[in-house]
Length: 221
Image 1 (cartoon, rainbow, N blue to C red):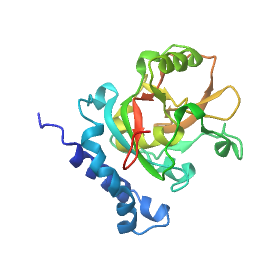
Image 2: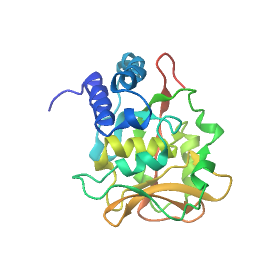
Image 3: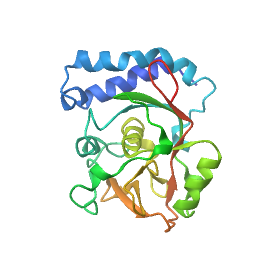
């Protein structure tokens, strides 16, 4: 097995975003987009030291996240797909007009004030399949881990499409809109779908994703 090279993985993730048209989506040239992400490169080795890398089991050391201020959710979700390609991802119609704008990061996520950052120590959270989302979120908080936002979930799916599989889908409790809805990513019509479920309703096929933390170009968040 080839040893994990975090810097090579960082470069792969940058190439993936560039290949999907993120620079144009962000209103930047390829060079300016790459330059925006470059300060994160130096933080990767330390941020991922000792991290578990097993995408098939739902664990990855880090994911490069571009925020909605740079790349809108409505544009990034269609750039996702299941492993092997196929139909593009989509936002479910259950999000009424203007709803996505109201699903913002909770104060507990303590998001960096940056356009791009690293999400580290990511877990898909299938251990929470069948658990009431409200209870899963409480358990994750007790462990000192952080719930994923919608943008982070899309970033995870973009870079690691093999994580979204039947009966191993995941909620994104780090984005809320002030009501009982919890956004989630699952499979519908043979494509990734961004939808939501009630915080009190468990689903056997829906876990709760989390991360160890977030890191910018010069500090942990």
